[in-house]
Image (cartoon, rainbow, N blue to C red; front, side):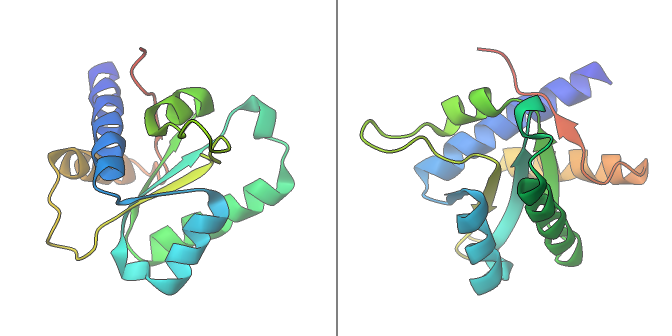
Length: 145
């Protein structure tokens, strides 16, 4: 079980890095909601991130519920990550930018077939296996630096 989780964490890191390079990463709750509204078919994968500090943020939890419902309705794989700082490190913000809101991130693909990514396929399998045991939004632990 541990190695499956570990490889999912590695795959998630690879996916986020390559999506960012290819400009296929949407970062932020509001930005993600916009993409879901305007171009739902472009969404390939969704990451929700939270930690203890935000567990009591009711507005954020409502957004999460709506985003999860959208993903379930549109057959989009979705995972949770409990390490916001590590996630922020991976997607990084440019020197003069505000730190990004990494509570929600979407990996989009301009057209469903144009961008095949083995990390995305591995994560798809991980999510499918999780759903088979009724874990609808599996939690992934990112590899340590």
